[in-house]
Amino acid sequence: MSSLPLSLATPKYCNLNPKARIATWNVKTLNDTRAAGARAEILVQRLSENSIDICCITEVRWPGSGSKSISGWTVAFSGRDDDLKRQGVGIVFSPVAARSFIAAEAISEGVMLAHFQLKSKKLSVICAYAPTNDYPETEKDAFYSELQTALEKTSSRDTVMIAGDFNAQLGAEDPCSWHGSLGKFAYRKPNLKSNDMTHRLLNFCVSNELVVRNTFFNHKRIHLATWMGLTADDNAPNIRSQIDFILTKRVSAGQVLNCRVFRGAEFETDHWLLVSECRLTFKKSPREAKPVRYSAELMRSDDVQKEFRAAVNQQFDSSRHELSRSPEIAWQQFQSAMQVCGDDLLIAASQPHKPWLSARTLELIEKKQIAYRELLSTRKEGAIMALRKDHGNEKIPLSKKKYRTAVNLCRKSVRQDKREYWRKMSEELMGDFQKNNIHSAYQRLNLRMERETAKPLGSGSVRRPDGSIATDRDECARLRREYFQKLLNCQRDIHPSVWDRLPVHA
Image 1 (cartoon, one colour):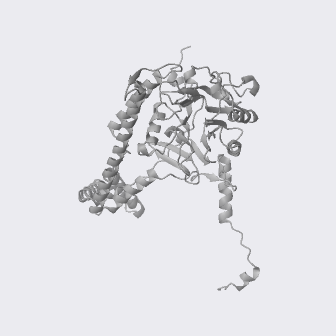
Image 2: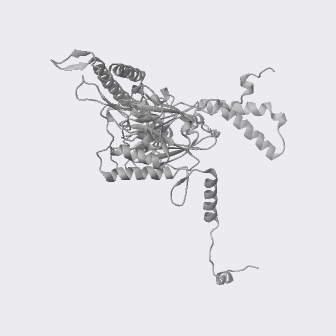
Image 3: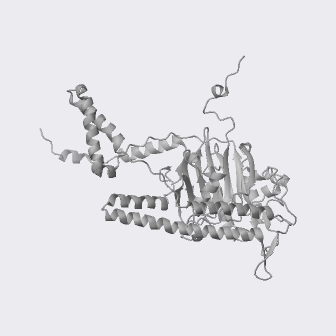
């Protein structure tokens, strides 16, 4: 029997090996003034280079909560309510994952929850940033109470992934003592001791039937450690540890195919990117056709007006013998002719968003990443790097000095690009106001404000009476129906004597 070609035997919607990459990364901050606000753009670039679909970022340091669109990606974040730029978590997802995004909910500055629609079920992603071991017991208790609250807001049928910085070291624990929640490939080193955050994390996993998934895969030691602590002595080896983890339900642990650290992603942070490959397929919602909008700028142009009149007259002259005497049909023919001419002449070409980072800055960013990889290749545990004499007897590693220089050059170029961007924008605004083109000027301002201002979380979602976000489609339909029944079918208690006093006209 002859076999069919693979393109015919396999439906187009069937992916034989679907993989989604879900990661976590402690970014230190997205609010660095030295980089002139470019850290978010660089973060999106790094995630795109590593084919990440969803990334739980910690230590964002953005106050409040909301979501921003950056270079086509969505950054949903949850920070402090007192406007202090500390802690904070966020969930960054790609345009592909955005098409299956349902809703996000800010729990606290250390916990955030987001829901995505898969082909057969929902994916609930929880981003967590735990306090360090030296924090008071009350703050540790509050964090795990908030994490438990976020977990209870997910359905038992959902695929749940919890990722973030837990500040716990699991390498000193025996995997057999934790009922299968801990794997045997945690990062281990001599004299490693467990702390209070270690026991809290493992107790949380055991009580909720979760597994620490990145401790179940056997990789090189450099692909297990997620954090590098810089020592005071430049010549001494750095301290490495594993404090970032990805947790999943025990019943769905097989969906995580691999989990390891990718050290090549550079972001001026002491944490490395932890990536998990999962057997998940996002459900793509159909894209709604946007209504056609004609350009008011083109309508004001005298040349375009003359060309439009000529095109309309030509359209009517060519179909004059087909005009109907019926007013309805004649109106439809007139409307069709105007629409054809408008589509040809009055639709302005779309202008894609251009990043304000110059080509020189992008080149410096790449050079900085190359210098970072050279630094990683020389900084081995127990090894001394090549040294050079500088400023008397001070010795600085060659690779570290090169990386510091690349970082400073990159920050300087970013600040120059930011100043140049605002200078050009102010010139364009002044030109619009001088030409009395108020519409174009305010359009530029509104567009810039939309990109700078964060949108509130859950603005397009359906909420339950207690304020929580509903994610099930049937539940959302029921809540909408109940809301409009209560809104439009109000019961009025009117005394019968009122009807008797109403005037009746025969």
